[in-house]
Length: 436
Image 1 (spheres, one colour):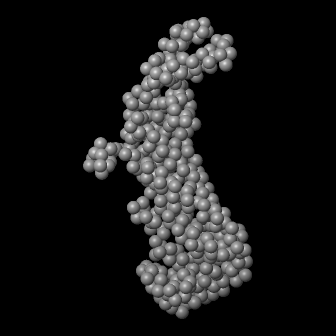
Image 2 (image 1 turned 90 degrees about the horizontal axis):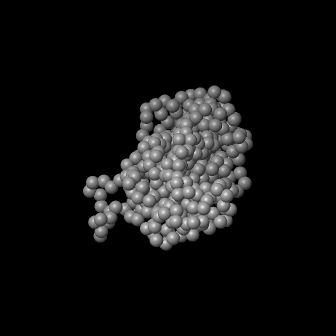
Image 3 (image 1 turned 135 degrees about the vertical axis):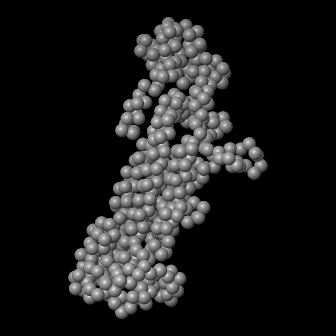
């Protein structure tokens, strides 16, 4: 975790004290149910909860000192609790194994992280929708292969982003449901020394579902799906970030990151206004995607359990969620304050002499009885003259002067094919599909 790219609420989920508090709750809830079942004295859970009610400070340093001797983190924690609670603490962890605590805790942490990320996505969607409505009919050029294609609106560009992040949100909801799974099944997952009712009780108290077959660890396909969804969200962030970076290029300059008073763009060139936020988002997306691969590799564990996944998850759990939380918040800020230049968009639309209307002329010629091959040839030979003049010539003027073209279409019919508004007749339909 890099503090520069971390926000407090998400970071807090992964602090050692927060982890140990979840460990305690798992152990206390399990002991509580064991008491109800008559496996341990009911006084054991009462002693644990009474101590907990005093809101004890989790002494991370003390637990670490014990672990330095035991070389086992869960045993170190149980030892520390026993030192504080007393004799009744010996009934903790009856029939349980370390993975019951560790895996269930990770499930709680990832579910809580997902809740923050879902709230982040909601804020981003709100910002994108507002800007999309603002620029619903702002004409701009659509590009394919980076080259002028046909007119769109800037609102449509943002509507596409909204639809994509709405899909991301749905995927994260599903991933959260899949990862929020509890396993309290004991060694190799057979419940030999602990009843399934204990697992159900702990799951209910922590807001989790139960893992049908845990094999001592919760199967890592669940985690692979979760981190893969985070990676997809990161890629969607990068897609929108790259669009903004391209639009901010000097030769384009149709949109631009907000440049605050006192901000500096370059240590050497005082004129620079660089797309640093969206470039940063591109870099963060690369890291978040990188965390998905080890999660996929964690799926194949040896037999009922090994710990090759453990060290991986100590990295990717905090890092992926903390980084994505920061990235979503940063992108929301970029969209919220994005500077949009409609006049420049219109100027760019017009700079190639009407080439953006070539398809309408092509279709009109075919409807007038010209073969598609001939129609393409007629439009292209005039379009290439405009292209080679860098837009100084007019496609409409050249077509009007082409006898083969005017034999099929009158000058007035040609002029009708250069109506910009024609391209936007279904904007309302698209917006209704996206925003409802």
